Image (cartoon, rainbow, N blue to C red):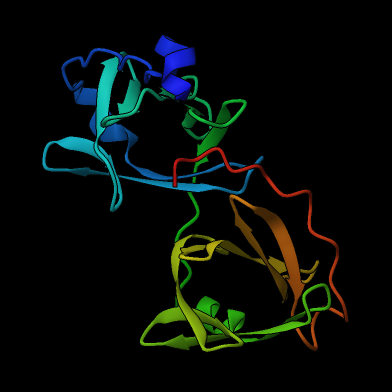
Length: 215
């Protein structure tokens, strides 16, 4: 019925025409992080194309501009000025109300000693929930009530990705881990203090982000 009244407004936007894959595209792979939303985007060069890790290929539409295969989004890469120590940036324009800027992560993944420093118990007063971080077979895992258990995949520094979203471990002025934050499309930087190291209680989460994805 909606299609009768809205007509062409119901049709999907036309996809930008594909362009030849530029040779420079191979240099855009890596991990990117948005300070505004705490999202992590991982890109790899595979089978002759730039693609999301475990996801869609990126189709070139112009100089350093791409779109995910089948979607009318815009992913625009920008290199830092010559001689600058800044990281390359990725600007994504999709279903969100505004574009987001991502910077390439340059910190190395944590070694075994650093992973061990994340292990411990964490508690949120806001949700009255206990979380446990442990390291098994060289990988960090996060578990909580009702038998939930997820693998934390390191992407650089204190930041990890998981089926729960982005998990980042926080530190005090001495560099001691004192908590973790959880971010996803509906929750942004929700802080959970570490028991014994970060005091009691947790702060209120920041306002949740609206979900403009198709998922």
